[in-house]
Length: 378
Image 1 (tube, rainbow, N blue to C red):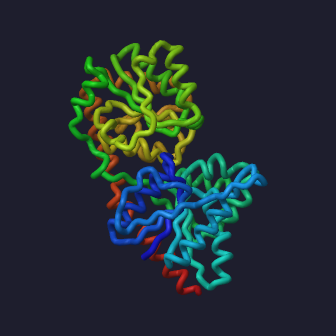
Image 2: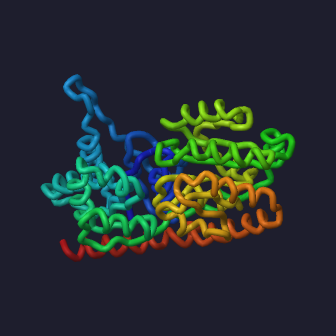
Image 3: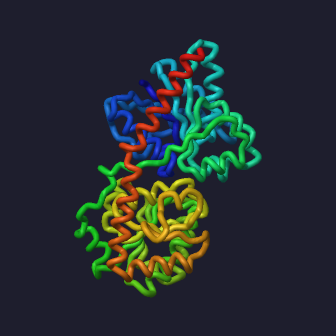
């Protein structure tokens, strides 16, 4: 089967999941064609993987270049010339509407193919609910041949805020245990924590919904009780404010802003605790990857996080903005080595439930059902 995957090529969860899915499918013999405005960040070379760049010409007439139009044109070109069997769209905006546009063009050539839309989070809970986009988002999702969501919570939110007329299949995010696992990096840890300090980590795209300043404030309270270091991985609009807050609190010397990192698993291998105080998380892929490396998670109870981070077992859940509670939970764990080790083991065991070998077949089955039904109805 030849599958087209349309995604954002960024460090965000939707782009990461789409890339990991495409690579896993290629390993199983599928021919995978990525369509994006630049090469996805985690995409590795494989004989069965192809990348098609969406080129968006700029003209003085356009204040905002028409990316959706360029994307639809690229979809048509790839579908026709690569003879694709299926298109899998990750993140509804604008991928689902562009696919509908492409489908109308292809119908004129009798070369239409089915498409599946996977909902990832803010395309539903934040951006999609904006009145500017809602009618188009609703229409294009309903025009999909199948719809998936990465958590039960996101499925519920989609039905709550949009008039969806089709079933939504929950297929959770997954983790590659062969890539995310705890390795011996003590030499690396000694460089970052020479006095055997505890290491806390936060990974995100540093947007407002990630509440990055809460991470800094939690660490400030933790550091008052536990010698520790904080590693901030990622980049985005809230990074500067977070750096300034760390300076004003007098803890900047113990906080390292590492920017975007490719080998996150190596950093997670030396980590004692993962902080994720997000305002919204449809699933929490970064938390799952930390858990696969045996790292307990201190998070909010937002969105789909309670589905993977089991309160009092793999970490702790708190209300959004409750820095005091999250700090207390972190201190309790970091000052009780026996309990910390129990949580690390539980986190790893929980992550193994989401290994890609269990999740990829769910997508394969859906692909088969969709393509079979499409052919039968032609």
